[in-house]
Image (tube, rainbow over the protein chains, first blue to last red):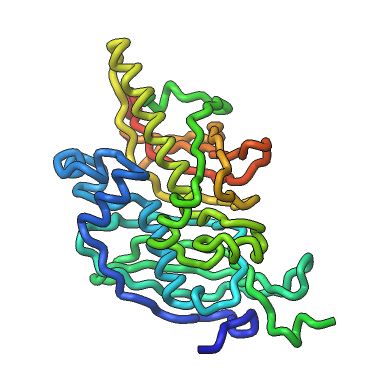
Length: 153
Length: 159
């Protein structure tokens, strides 16, 4: 399989990935370790919360998006890592049994000033459940190597 | 936890530290971020990170873990004083998350936060909306991680 480089990322829709199934056990295990708030662990407390039912941690959803990005394309991309996340919007709760789909759009792709052998690809990731409801939207840059000849002086 | 009215802009709090072992880093990465520089020491050394580096999502999740643990301590203290306890709501998201320096195996990150803004919600009069900057600093005093968090915080006197 060819490795994707900076040149493979042009503004517009890049791909749709998934579905990825999330179980109640997945939600409870992540919450127990990293986000043990009652709304993520306890059915009765969750029903009384703003989210009205057991929901996964937003950080779990972010971590799942990372895994879906990896399986979708980052695992076969000459990626050097990411400097951060510009914005994450948690719009609807992650529920036990959800089947998640990830849409990736390239918002911007530019050559790095400080490391001209690399480019910075800013993408927008959108996760939807099987009903098509948007659960979260994230905008994040990743650093991607350019093709060898492009980076050569 | 405290009510919206009791929280002051500019208030700072240190809420815990965590040492990232190689085993922790690999376990999280195997599940959520299996890029080679998060799984293998040699691949990490050859990467921009210069060593086995924790996934940025792992650093963020640990920050949340320590925030929740600190919230539970604050709640227990409030209960012990016989005060009414505020149960915080969910978060609508975050902004400006920066993975500034790698967190390598063996690094200890200490986390703190500072309240930046607070506003009431017309749509949800029983809730206020709080923004706080969370920051992680390693054992060498270098800022490694920061983001601007948002949360719904209950009001003592709605509306």
